[in-house]
Image 1 (tube, rainbow, N blue to C red):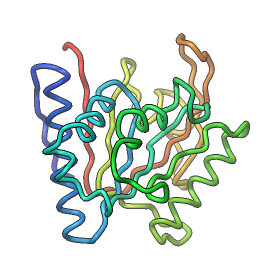
Image 2 (cartoon, helix red, strand yellow; image 1 turned 180 degrees about the vertical axis):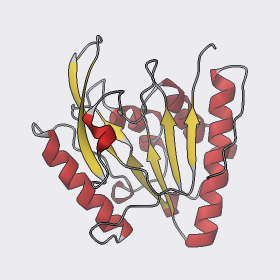
Image 3 (tube, helix red, strand yellow; image 1 turned 120 degrees about the horizontal axis):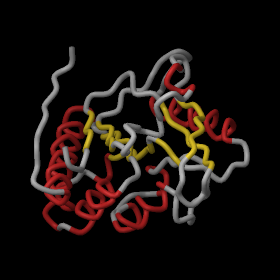
Length: 206
């Protein structure tokens, strides 16, 4: 069984600061050991604060091996870049557009495609290419950032949805229903059966 470390924090900002420190530590270790750092970003309010800290805090920003980084996304809503609900747009506004990353280092899910299945197929091909994978192989990310919704979902894997039973694909489309603006949205996720590090950040009362 993988080692698990549970930490409790006073508030959301403390969670974000700890997460930012962990990103720097894991990124530095990966770059030193393998010459590259692969990270999968997530949406949500806490990750947004983490991204802002990494971009705007001089000590954190200057400690990251930006030129060794490959950025991916754990999920995306069925909207294009520029939309207020886009995980890519949020990450871009908070961090990606403010740091020394080249466009070729950032790999987003094409949420603007009318056919979500096509976006999933293309993103799976992107991951296979960037990780040098053969058919049937899964990527091993250095770090996967995760959050959790109020009903227990993470990476757009909602309770009772079909994607929870997917075992063969790296990337799959998934549908969920919710009450907020946008109503019915399609999201894509990819499966993290292999990863070196995982960070799950949950904020709220017990």
